[in-house]
Every structure is written in structure tokens, then in C-alpha cells.
Image (cartoon, rainbow, N blue to C red; front, side, top):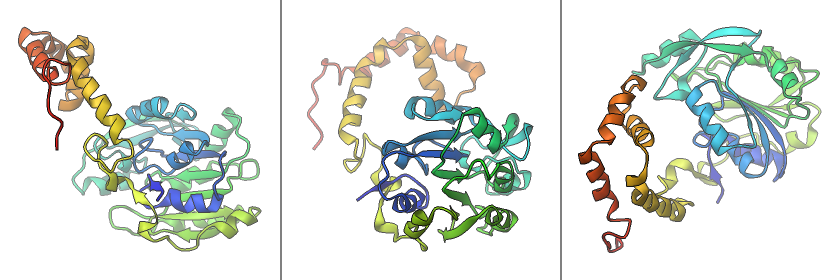
Length: 311
């Protein structure tokens, strides 16, 4: 059974429309995490490549390591170039948006955000700057700013075969597509599927893709979902369980040999420590007591202590 990385089977539905195509090009706007809840990772694994637009620095950094074939652009897309306020949610990054009302709605669910100024270009400028030709998939998930992204394209020059756009407010499930769907239909696109979260459109000239695109959401058990496979080192059902277990054991064995900066970075990540506290963490990891603790952790994996495998 295929593994769906997306939130709502978006990648599975698109795979049916593109019928096993082994090479293609996507533009993923509001790409989020490079794997989890990601619509285009399925296609990256199949050999595709593309441009991912992700303004959140930590996520953009991950793309460079996990998906090196992709071009990651850490900016916003809108109707015009310039700068814009970006309401950034650190814990639930998928709620981050340029729309203040969406940010306030998410905040009412108990999540806090910070406001940062981020560079903004148009979708047409993005395509021009990167020499984009044929576009198979344009995916847009920008928490209420979909109309701005669509308005910034030159639809005569840059015509994605399929457009997928988030179409509801996550706070209450109310529809948002009325603000941008008429414009997209005017550009020669045909509505094909509403999966309860996103709406899918196919360019009018792409007859074969339109014919293959499902018109109703597939059964939920058509694919395995990320949440079902658990964490790789812990779950035997995870496809990478064996490798993750090997790397985990190797990491513990190498722990005492890590330099102070690396150890401080690991602690900062684990504790959610502010960058200003890094000096204190570096001092902590260089104490005799801390180094002894690392040795005690590692000895079960570095040959100092032979453990029976868990039953």
C-alpha cells in the first residue's frame, strides 16, 4: 500500500492524475515541513523536482538537507513585490500566515505567534527568476492568502497543469474559495475535486489529466498515512525502522566524542532554550560531571557493556 505524506490524501489524488509519471516539476507555495504533512514529497521520491516556497527559516533549512534536488526559496508570494508582515507560529508552523485575521483565529485555539517582516515577490517573478518552463503541479497552502498568490501569476506564460489550493479556514472549516475561485476559472481552469480541505483544478488544455483526476475523495484506507507508522526508531511498522535503530545505537556510542557546540545545540533543541543561553549550555556540557554522564549513557552501546536485545 502506498505511503501518503500529506494531510488529506492530496498526494494520492495527484498521483492518480499523473498516472505514475516518473519525472515532473512542481511549485509548492507554503511548503511546510519537507516530509510530514507535505503534498510534494511523494513526487520528490518518484524522481520529480521543483521549487518550494517556505519563509520559515528552520523549515527552509531542512529542505536543503532532505530534498537537495529542490530549489528552496525562503520568501512570501503575493500580488506585488516588496515586504509583508508574517505571523509566524513556532510550534504549529502550518498556521503561519500573512493574514492577520487568520493568525488571530489560530491564536484563539491557544497558539501564540510572532510578527516578522519577510521579503515578498509574485509567482510570475518566481518563475522568471528560476527559468521555469513546464509546471505539472502548483500547490498553495498559505492560510487565507491564496487569492494574493494566484493574482501574482502571469497565467498566459506560466500555466500549471494542476492547481491545488487550501480552501477552508482551519479554525472552523468555513469555505474561503469564493474569494479566488472565479478568478482561477477565468484563467481557463476546470474545477475537479474538493477533498474537504483543498480544491483541485486542471488546465482546460490538459484533457488526459482531467480525465484521470478523481472527482471524489478516495477512501481513507487507500494509502497508509504518516501517523500510522510512528517514529522510526520506536515502531517496527516504520519502513526505515532498521536503519533508524542502527543510527540510534551509533549515535549513543559516539555521544562522548561530540564537541561542546554540538552538544549545546542538542540541548538547546531539546529544552527549547533561547539562543542567548548558548554560552551557559556550552559551560554545562564541558563539566566533568556532564562528561561522565555521557560516558554512562554511551557504555551500553560502545562495547563497554553488552546488553541483551529487547524481546
